[in-house]
Amino acid sequence: MPDMYIQGIKVGSLNEYNVASALEKMRMQFQYQYPILGGHWVRGGQVLDFLVDRQPLPVPVLVQGEYWHSNPATEAFREIEISNYGKGYWDDLVKITEEESATFESAFEAVRKKIR
Image (cartoon, rainbow, N blue to C red):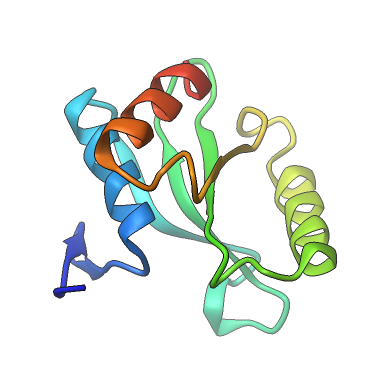
């Protein structure tokens, strides 16, 4: 995969790139690799793949690729932490699977259906 960037940050996967491209095509404002609980810099910190600026509340989005998200127990804990942290500040967590984001077209459809 050639080097690709989203908002000046090197892309972690083609799936994330496809989701970002779909968000941009739909003219949705978002922040990529949004840190919470200290992000990568603090033990136990988390990083959202995307935080989409929607009204009345922003929408946290995780792109669930097999490579980075292969441990179900760790992922379940991560999702609970993210949901609890954002309670009252953002909408429900949206997960987009590897299959749903494999191509631009499938990512576009997933974003259209899941982020309102």
